[in-house]
Length: 157
Image (tube, rainbow, N blue to C red):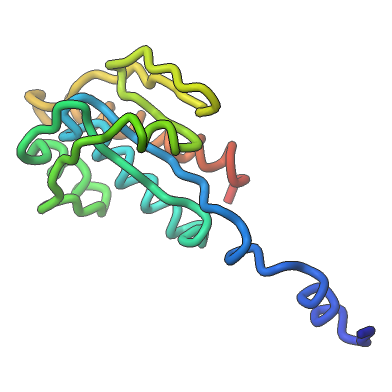
């Protein structure tokens, strides 16, 4: 039905994308899921929220041999930039989860190749037993990579 209000015409002519499309699944993994992948996940959650992509992006994290806790130095480094991961528990990641992902970033510890899944290995040092002065550059590089990933896939904000 035609209308003189262009805003209504645009709304009427477009399907409700939030309900008709499948979210993009971004997965961040490493062996222990206690450092780098936790940082990447925290930055990805921040980007998803800042860009209003809550219904469009699913974020998954895990490890092949998860630790009992997130490294305290990682909790400290993320707290410095306003991100709270205290209380998070490293999780196991299954091959099925990886295969169902649209994008998988490994953290310098894999040559993972999955058919039909965009994979990248981010060559990053393990922050686990390092002093905060050495963890900050790792954190900052992870943030840069996550922002670039979101810019590439969803447009710059």
